[in-house]
Image (tube, rainbow, N blue to C red):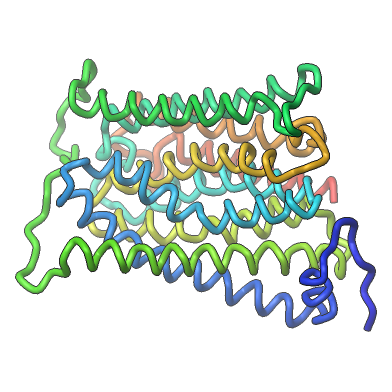
Length: 357
């Protein structure tokens, strides 16, 4: 059956479109499975590297784990932007922030001793959430100001990179010279190196395994982007809904599995740091995508649905920050007030996307 060719489609796109909806859906599901399985393996290796390097779970979670698990989402957004699918590109990036924060509330269920935000108290994670809120504000400012670009790149993209790098430097400073420390309680879990077995792999082998896993996640992200665009054309579903409800969830699966796996391993700072670090890196999707998008400023190509996702990301991030500061020991069903509110906001955002079609 012949399917209409979308704007900016290439010969490779034609291949996926000609496959039909069912094969594309199967490829999409298989790629999402690869992303999820690789995410579990990434968590184990990141936890070991956090101990060996002395960087700590919060830093390794925010940088290494956050970037590695977000790679599939990066590829999805950049490939989509390169091919002119702005709505899919930006909805994937921004929708991932909300769903990944919701994953943290889900992971809280698996930690029975106390509320996760209480037990994982760490100044570095507070800095990362504040950094995320600051970075999410930049696209709003860019969208509401005049359309100015240099080589088709908006200055906001350069600013996002500068804020991200400066935030990482600040996080490292806070880890070594903290001016704020959480009150210690029996439920507070400290980031302490774990003893390794004698047959533990070398650091070189560990790094090589990480490289292979990250490469697999990257390829899976490309398949998710291509099949998602084809499915959007074949099913008539808008790219905004496809990005918000499907690609953002599929490319965020590593965050879900790594967060739950980290919680079950007792690496609580790694769990929170991985989610928050992944979210800050997800905002950089917009900067990468703006560079790939050749028709001007990506921020000015966004519509009200993407701005709504930015606002949703700001709301759930602020709720998470309040939860980390409040440190409620126990809530309803072992989930604190911030977890319940985050899940409620995310459910409302999904419902809004469905209503808008």
